[in-house]
Length: 345
Ligand SMILES: [Zn+2]
Image 1 (tube, rainbow, N blue to C red):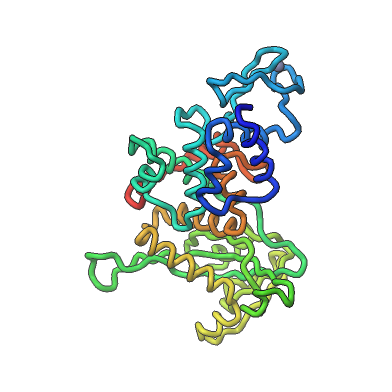
Image 2 (tube, helix red, strand yellow):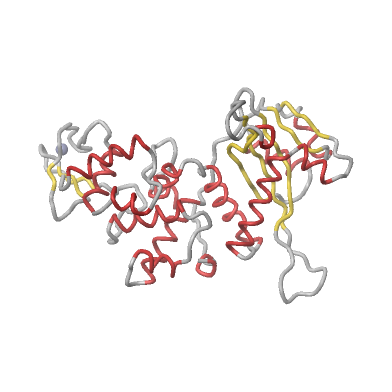
């Protein structure tokens, strides 16, 4: 290893969590060797094992190629970035690390031009490609179901997003229906935040574009996203009535048509809706129906990892633990393509 101090700091990082500032980040990842050491630590926490011959021994390191580990026994080369977002890229690891850090620490995201400046890249195209690939990792759908924890319940509701399009006549609407499920957790009594919303706060969230307000659409969303047996709280819209039959513990709140009532009884999901709408309008200046699901997935990624920037950072780079994240190849097999990001970036 080129830099012993860097290795020490990287072990610290793994234990202490994520750097809170850009100078901290730079101190931890000052050069290619530090980034390579970090990747190596994540991939082989118990020491390097050659994939070809199975030898467990410190690899041979080639100083000019910090991304490559050579087996001392059979001379087989292993790429540190295989299976990650950085695979086959000519961009230095430190640039990727910096980019992923900016993406996970700057809540609304940045434009490719801002990115190019921040990273000191000579080519706009490079900044664009990095952003595009990192964002692809962000918009992968979460397939695991939420809920299923004792003492927690799930709020489910739907809302309309989007609306008026400039230049079109009055009464022209482009609103899209969005279904949401959110885990409601409770803070320990007596902690600093337990007096807000009775100590309740949002856990993980799921969002999906809904075709309509039928039982098939709305209960189908619940079945796709929430573990059966969980207590699900909704308003008294009749479409949710079959949730009990579908294996959920269902509690419907009579709101008597008063939207304020719904907000009082489903407070956490209304916070999520408010956040979502602010983010869509503020960051992306509105989103077309066609691309809304990709944005919803990005919102879910950011929201669910808002307390875990280190997980977000690793997920973006494609170096998360296997259970957390697909490989980069899996991620792209979905054929995700998003040309309009060039506009909003
Ligand atoms: Zn070997």
